[in-house]
Image (cartoon, rainbow over all chains, first blue to last red; front, side, top):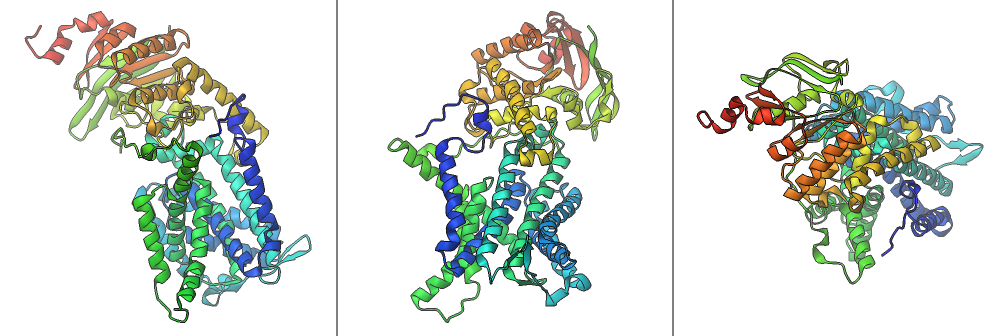
Length: 361
Length: 256
């Protein structure tokens, strides 16, 4: 077991608690950067997909895991980010301006939508945001002159300082672009967690009453959380558009919203790792299933609902046996090894406490 | 000494129930003021009025010349009013340190963009907050629990952490809602020294609700007895304890 001997307040502020974890993450980034030379194009594409889902997961994680506000409307923000980025580019904006602009636009729209929605709590907020997902589909069809409705749009070529990036012809460059966005979003998220606003989000999640007694403006904190969450989701949406190459009103359906929420629950609510673990499951599961099907010899037989069925089962199993998600399980295994042979079975038993002031409203 | 908190003719009704009835009292700067009364007398309701969780039906609340009714709950905290809760309202999925740092929220002067980029200013501010919090940790002897999650802590420690969170905000007025409830005799004794020190060393005015008369008479300068939301008696602990109306409210008519 490693013990952190702290000698200054900076130790608790810095990104990595010690050299070992810095080394781990540095190695991870180096491996990620050299990946295009190791993997073939198909698997590189799959890894790119994982990263894009992870960015979207980070967005929702900030809202649901960090601030405690469930949203089933994030497919709508993926769509908004995607359409706005590509429409901006069709107006002749360079990618480096259109992409952040799409994120900011999505964030602003998210905040405006949040202002009435955050009056709702828990399941009611989820229901209200479902409506967003459903509306998005119709709005895209109705706004045909801009969005091209059902016939959809094609993602243009990305050009950054003369370097051309396209998902099919230069998958390695597209992968690096997505990787860079992933790292930036993760850093931003991590920075939020170690600063006052991130703590205020957690405060709102755990106890609104005492958060407001400590000077946190509840409605403002929630709206800001919505805004940041939607902005990150919008960036992921734009990348999804480029990844898919072509998209229309059905690309960002409500199923995407549900998958996204499932993903962060499976990954582990409230942790950055959870978004990545969840993304791996969500992005690889369909491939894994079809490969398994080939392997058992049922390759040509179509089984409708197989994917969603397996997904649902995984979710149920996680909620029953590991509510902390893959990240929780990962932590337990790590601690077991660190303490070996002193880990006890009951160490992670959840302690229940029934000490909540009856809510004031 | 000047008047810090002034409550005039405050009335609060829930439907037909009058929770606080035409209540008037004031808290002087630098004193420990205790509110006692039987269950359901409206003690915690008075706290929730001051914290602005409830809107009074009538009356006025003034803190150091500021009208509290003009402000929302979070803006009340900005004035320097911190509080604890009767049933402990900590942030369970965070460490003790993080809980105390939330107490510093009213001193936040960095914005969203600075925090996402974690600029040198944010780092400087974080260290400043940390220093203030470490002082509270030292004061309350919370060192062993600094990095522990709240969810695993025993009740007595949580109670102290909640007091710490309120202190970390650097308040002028501290509202303590039953600071000794559920504590052992020793812990209650500790709480008594702390309240004394909070007043004498830190110069913070304390307004508390408490049932433990030993603690109340030990630390408070003045006591207000409430029954059915109305003032029964006010004065030194001895005066209030020997007041016939108070004895009647607690023990029933004829007991005196």
